[in-house]
Image 1 (tube, helix red, strand yellow):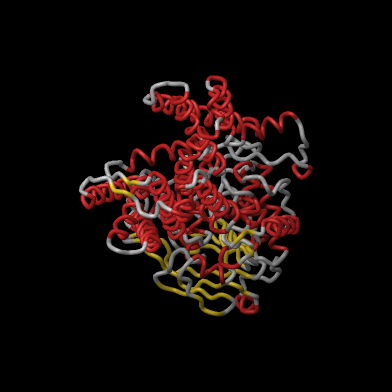
Image 2 (cartoon, helix red, strand yellow):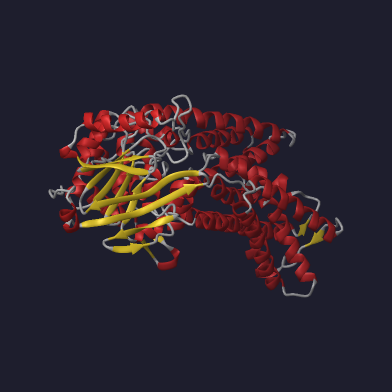
Length: 353
Length: 278
């Protein structure tokens, strides 16, 4: 990663793997539109690996099964993809900070439980939802404060809250599956039941996070905090407050995705653990091209990553492969995609010289 | 710069002194980092700090920039006593620092780094970035101070060490800093890149920015500075105009002081300590 000047004044700044976005070839760069610069741009785009494998998967499955393109199947697909996309984009905020939230999946499960509980306590379903959202955001606040104030790594903090709320829901529900309120009428259609409801909400939330990350001051501060914590602090950015807010945001969007899905399904099963749910979104973020080391994120890559995982699960199903193979292939894809991302990143770095 | 003779007390009183450090001491446990240090920085002057590792140069700079607080002594900015509680505090008073560790975010673009935490935004609390304005101003500012970065949309990681340092310096002066503290701005830099930064520093001095530079390289310091202060054992042991001294004289001064300490048994060659106060 040595620069043209041949010096490494700041090894820390130079020794990162993530492939940065290549400058757009333009008159300003003085490079013009050469084949090399195009190739450079292509391999420097972090989303490129996941785009290629997703297109490959689409072609493969549509050749194997004609029903892949049916409306019914696409609805199944997008309903599967929606929560992965939302939680995965929340994890992008975490990963850009070089943090991680393992409790997001549990928040996804706990929020509908809160809704059910306050509803059975006699509150209108709308109020129950609002209270559930506030409580979920507080779980995020708890995660954030534990991480920044007590200095416990977020991996451990959120593993703790994951189990706390898994246990809490188990105990309070007596391990009984419950039927969700709010599943009827226009209300239900908008909040989960409608075929396209969850994916539209999902796109809205991911777009909001994308906007926050790429278009606002808060987003620059988030990237700076994750990219160079000391530099961000020295510049006067309230690094801890930025982190805590991101924990709150991921809890909030995960809760919303969870409530929508519970309403869609019509019930909530306390026996599910959040860990099963949170890992797939993290995989979506990572194969999408978001680095675990902080500072580099792609919301688009995460969306495509989620779509890819959806296609993989759905496609294997359609062509009649045993569903258990999904995990096997998910694992293979993680290994291939990560290897490709790292290698392409290094290739891009070599091109820059 | 300052054509006034600095060694005569009468003339000194008439000098336009922007920053004055008076009898500042700093201890870290049993270690004395600074022992009643006096220092003066003239307006538009470039003052070099010379000294061994651990002599107290970095501690002094950290106190001036608000990162650390002195145990005793006071700091006068334009004749008025100031007490900085944070780096932000000092910055608000026009004192900015370029750190040894290059406080840039490699994943952000040139202009995002220039505007880090001073972003231009619209829509109030939402804080939506006005990238067009930030770009335009960044480009103009870099042009003004003759820093040539071809593509301000490039991520800083893509730039050479010299270009990064230039951006760090540019950022520090962007907020209209009156005093700039540079802690080894040329460390680990090639000849071409050093020249880039030296030109930038000289240009800023011509514009009236006062600077304190820490560097180990006498050639750099003689080229950059108007005046040099040698810091030894937490004290300023020599205060001299660059025009009135030479590398040989300075070396002789440093070595003789060390020899004296060696003879007095204050220091043994084997156990010379490096570290705590950098």
